[in-house]
Amino acid sequence: MREEIVQLSALSPDADARLDKRFAVIRIDAHRDGFAIPDEVAQRARGIVTSGGLGLPREVMDRLPRLAIIAVNGIGTERIDLSETRRRGICVTTTPDVLTPDVADMAMALILAGMRNLVGDDRYVREGRWAAHEPLPLARRVSGKRLGIVGLGKIGSAVAERARGFDMAISYHGRHRQPDCPYPFQPSLPALARAVDVLVITVTGGSETRHLVDRTVIEALGPDGLLVNVARGSVVDEAALVEAIAARTLGGAALDVFEYEPFVPPALIASGQVVLQPHRGSATTEARAAMADLVVRNLEAFFAGEAPLTPVR
Image (cartoon, rainbow, N blue to C red; front, top):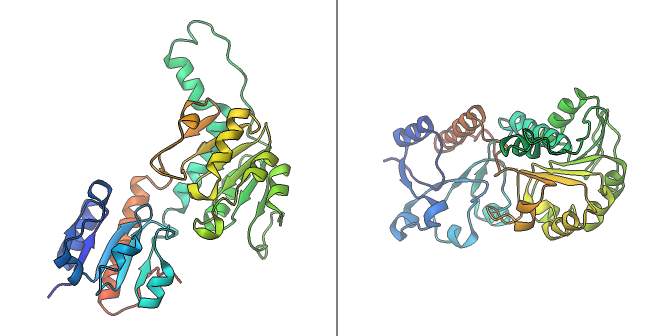
């Protein structure tokens, strides 16, 4: 008899077909309908497929007495109670590494868009203002600027590698100094912000990093600084960011993530100082195919009695 799993978030057509071949899959569109798992399904389900954005609320987990594995299509686990999964012996897997190049590419794209005003200039052409010879402010050079990275993990390191191609001077902040790292370490995040032109956030989300980038850090980055976030919206104190943008005490922001997704503060939407993306860092055909494949392989390995490929430790 095939194991029953609940799929809350769609994968690729190929990955969905592979799930159907191996498991009894009950699909629920949690983005549209919430976590409306029927009671009879909840009593039997052994696995859950979800996304980093959805996670699995504790109250839903409590309704799944036979739950053995949560397979996350993404790298975020802040919306899963990991202390409870450990207590119950529930395996949690994510899809690390395969999305690293694409998120790093997004970070560089946001740096370029924020410094060179690519979005505003696009509107300038489309709205006929170029043809009308309206004046247009100069943008700022990216090459040679000072880049600070918050969280020099795999994604942060990939951003640094790309930034080296722009001759950027790189330094970083994290919980610990990275061994054998060629970049200067700054133990104080406000001090790092004061020392750079661009601050890129690639640190993991969760309670430990909530509002890590607060009013003090934003003020330290200053009226010429650019804040770039490709990590999690919770890492930035969004209210403080809105205030800084309105008061022009921060030069600008380029954001792929927000504190209360998919809701974005109207002040950020209205501001010409801000570049916005709808959490699309990993949204390439290549990354999403690799992520979906890893979700399926983790489930297949787990239910075959083997070690999953990418468990959360």
